[in-house]
Length: 70
Image (tube, rainbow, N blue to C red; front, side):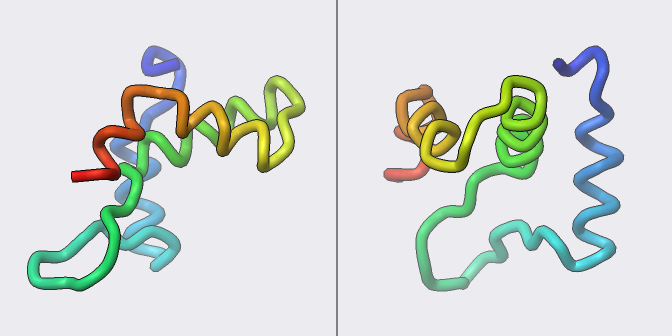
């Protein structure tokens, strides 16, 4: 997917539009998923016709689930 999707450009656009807010130092709360993970999930949902629970399950089964626990 990285070869076809300009993640960095899309992330910058989403931050500029206020759609995605990366974690800022000193903020309280859980760790957000990285933008490229959310974008990838959105594209996979569209391409493979996945519903939200199916996509959420795939994200939680991935190695990124350990990222969120830190």
